[in-house]
Length: 167
Image (cartoon, rainbow, N blue to C red; front, side, top):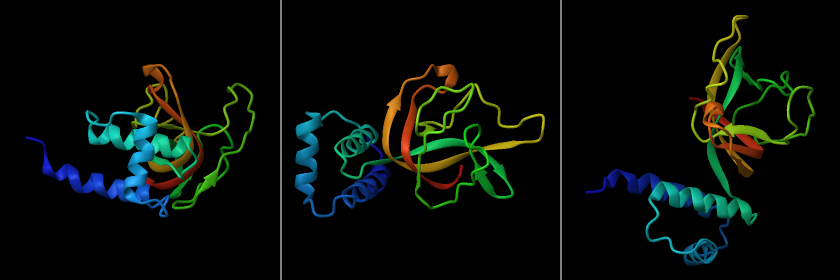
């Protein structure tokens, strides 16, 4: 038997997604999504939400998703690991990505995030005392970027990010 506890969090997420397009009726939201995606019958709730967020994002309808990002933490503030390292990121504030070409790094405009808090190629503590932490964030205007499992697997490259807090 399926766990009934999955229903309320699922409906809460549906509500957040629907509120990005409040003029749509619920049937309109689902019908538009179904026309784009196809048969929804066999989707588990987690997959349904991910596909719906992707649809809303791709169509410019306010799609967003929750991701993980590894950041430097200093004095209760969060900073990027490599690109634009001195910029402090404030919690609960939307930040737009900039394109900042940096020697030794591929140019990919956007915030590099993960769908899971896993990045085997990066250390959490460095010998110089630098501390890195996983943060939970919401992103908008994103696309998926396949990477090897040794680099955490699927990345999310987002144009907007809002830090929710430390994991």
